[in-house]
Image (tube, rainbow, N blue to C red; front, side):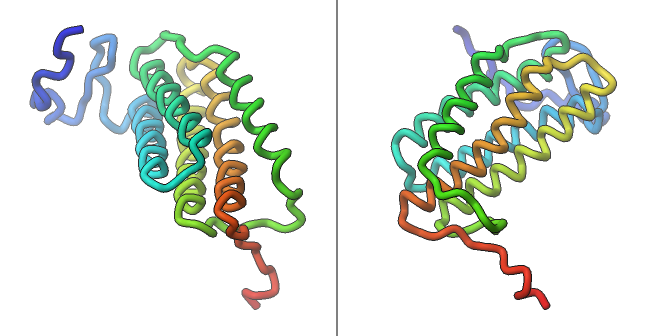
Length: 183
């Protein structure tokens, strides 16, 4: 493969537009660019999470997830393209079930926190939910791979469970929400 990014700045976006993967130009604040950018932000959040000490199996799965998020970004960037398939959603669901079985059932809401890695995982979860909202907004007006929407939805659930798993592995308790504390 040749040099794909040999020139980083092109000046073509100085007018408030940006190019999509199919060559069309759209406004930088379009729903498509907003969805694409938020998926990229989610990938960056997971990259930050990977800078923490994590169980090796969690690290490996997060790297796979980063690749899938890059694929979702590509789908959004190239209207009509489809890369994400149902087997990727199935894989998230299997991992979600496996990790959740190892945790005690929740009886209270939890707050983001515990270990630094779990807090970073909760941050990624919140960004994932925003990425899902932005992509869903786009899907209301343009065709988007529905499997990618399912993937983002399962991923936010997985990141919640993964944060709890990270705390459990570090022998740090989840931070429970205390309803009466705010009174």
